[in-house]
Length: 172
Image 1: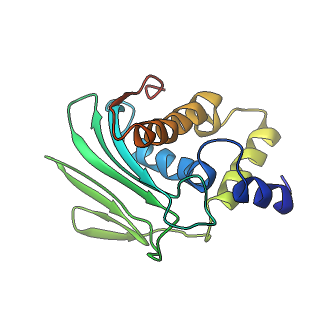
Image 2: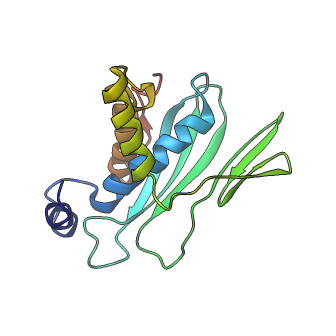
């Protein structure tokens, strides 16, 4: 998709989500990987807002979610704040994983290769799948649907003053 087309739909979206849909699916994909296939999210409740006039329809969402095993946690995604940073933290009785500019597993810090954007590795993986003729499991339609469902659930719940949303496509 050319930059002009992409920029146009972001500035005047005719669909729900705007930047939250465009960028948020990558964050939800990361969250799903951290939670693992055995403990997907099953329900969530969210609130949303538009903090920046130029980022309609909403640019910020805060959600509380529950996993299949009953764990609860929060999801916060905003393109409308001045805060710069990405962080994922998942904790359990066994320990925790925290990812920002590096990976911290129970206090042991590991460097992470950072290409500045997830787009470069995504395109590379897609090209490798085309070259080898094998489907990259992380780029399957089912995985994409699960990522989109999380964003949609947050947007719908946010538009309904936090009504709980039951997730149906997280077990992929």
